[in-house]
Structures are given as C-alpha cells and as structure tokens.
Image 1 (cartoon, rainbow, N blue to C red):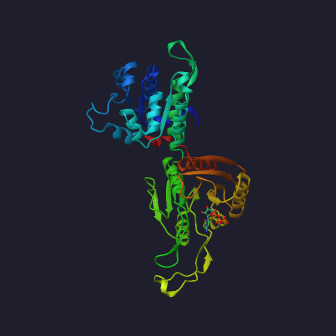
Image 2: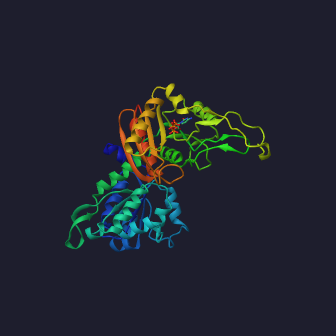
Length: 418
Ligand code: CTP
C-alpha cells in the first residue's frame, strides 16, 4: 500500500490519541501534529501519568478537541462511551506496561482504558518501555492476548532509552506510527464497492412441524466473515439460519432449509463479486414432511431421506464471470495432509476458487466453538495455515484471502472514511 494511500485514509478520520505515562509521551505530541497534518480529527486522552511528562495544554493547542484527562471532571457525563463509539481508530502512544495490562484484563480504571473497552473501532498500541519490562513475561503475554483479539501493535525499536540505557523498547518513530494508523484505516475500507453474499449457520430439514434434521453449526464463523467483510466496506447480503446479530448495513435474509438457502443465494448472486458458502448445509432431508406432528402412539416412523441440492456445486457449475466462489469444508481428516487433500478434492469437484477447510475432530475447532483452525486453499495452488485462534481472527484471514483473489482488485476508496 502506497504511503499516499495510508495518509489519505487519515483525512477526516476520527482518531482518539491515547497517551500514557512514559517518557516517550513527549513524542506523542509529534504524532498528534502529524495526524492533524494528515487531516484527521484528533481527540487526545491522557492518563494521569502522561500529564506528569507532558502538559494537557500542549495537546489541546495542537489537536481538534481539548485534551481529556479524567472520566469524571469534564463537562460530559460519560466521555468514554462517546469517544469510543464515535472513533474510527484509537491509537495509544506510548502504551505503557500498565495500560497494556489493564487493556488485556478489561480493567477500565481511567478514561483511556475505559474508552479502549467502550469501542468497536480498530486499536493500534505503540508500546515503549525499558527492555527488561518489554521482555517480561507479563508484557509478552498481554501483548499476545491483545494481538489475538485483533489489536494492532507497532513494535518498539532498539535505541537509547531513559536514564542513559540502551536496548529494545524505544517508541517507534512518529512517521512509522502515523503510517501504521493510516494503513489500518485504509485496509478497513479496502473492500468498498465490493458486493458479497455470505451464508451462515446450519440448515434445518423438517420431519414434521416440530422436528427437524439439523447439525451442530452455530453460525459464528459465517457471521464473523460477514462482519469482517462489512467492516472493510463491502456490501454484505447475509443468508443465515440463525438469529445472531448481523453487521450494520448488511441485508439479512433468514432461511431455514437447504432449499430456501439455495433460492436466496440464487436470487442474490447476480452482481456479487464474491459468494461465501460458510453455512453447514444438510446433505440429506426427509423425502416427505408430515403436515401434522407425528404422534408417539402411531409407532416409530420410517424417515426416508433424499439428497439436498448442493448449493455450492450448483454455483460452481454455472460460473458468473469475475465472481469469486468460496466454500468451507468440515472434515474429520486426521492430520494436515489429509485435510489439504480433502480441501483440494472439494476445490476441484465443486469448481470453487477458495476452500476454507477445518478438521472438526480437533479440540476447539469448528462447530459451536469460539475458536477455529483452518487451511485456506486456493485453486491457484495457494495455501494459508491459520493456527488455532478466534473465529474473528480466522474471518480476517479468510477476508484477506478473498481480497487477494478478487478480480479485478477492488478500487481503493479510502476517501469514504470522511
Ligand atoms: N454445501 C452446499 N450445499 C450442500 C452441502 C454443502 O452448498 N448441500 C457447501 C457448504 O456450504 C460448504 C461446502 O459445500 O461450503 C462443503 O460442505 P461440506 O459439508 O464440508 O462437504 P460436502 O460437500 O457436504 O461433502 P462431504 O459431506 O462428503 O464432506
């Protein structure tokens, strides 16, 4: 991504600049100035520690709004929720070991940490501390936790530290920090103009009005993919069997059976740049559905099954030019090689572009869990391993792969941030 794109993405963006109490706080003044130069709307939030290193007035004079330093003393009764909800990005410069620990633990002990927990905006933390602290297992663990949750980390550099020491822990250069902030914002809307159809959840195939054949799918992974596509600016049509919340702005079609899902996807696919079949579609359904509840006294019924339509294979058999097809593969494979082979078989047999394969026999993987571990396999030979992580992080990797395979690539429209 070009530097100009990263800087352009900051124009008009509402950025909360958190400053915590380390000697590097003085460099946050320069970051503030550069964010302003790039056209961002900057709201500074200083911890009490930060105000010992640099005056709130300095930030007030440079930023778009007066600096805030307290949850309680300002004119607004609940400043953290207003700041958190309205932010396009929160960036913490410098992030001390204390702030990282509080954020990782969910402790909202001051205005900055409360704002971090009250936001859904992307967050960039820029740690700065002495080498011993940077390498302490608590800091390492807290950063790993934050990374796993999708927080972006601008690593410190090696160099001169406070007190005449030298080592890793010096705050990254202001330019690097501002570039990273711009890159996060630019990537957020990198799919503007893209239309996506996503299916999620397990279908239910009725036996009678009260009973159905279903499966263990929770819809979490499909919804996470829809959330991530929408967060990056795509227009999402979500065809789901669940009542989970949909991303803001998405069109939601609630369906129950494979046949209903097939009809919904068929009606929505024209004009879509990508169709993601994350749903666990039943392969079999009762041939006949009883019109009234089957009574116990009538004896044990014979439920005769028939095959459902394979929605994904149907899409692959009638390709739409320029439309990317993404399938999922739930396997009980026994090892990476077997999983990869199964994914490749599904790629070829269903004529799709990407298959996201998971081994649902592994602990913490697939159905109902909040975590997943997948291989993202492309018809072009590409393979991406995503180790056990949250379904949100898996969704981000899936959407990265989608973005890399879209043809033509989506137009870059970071201006829409304003
Ligand atoms: N799929 C579909 N229609 C079906 C069954 C599956 O569109 N009737 C889609 C799923 O949404 C998923 C992919 O096909 O994207 C693979 O589903 P999966 O259940 O893993 O595989 P199957 O094709 O059902 O094959 P098998 O059960 O033999 O593994």
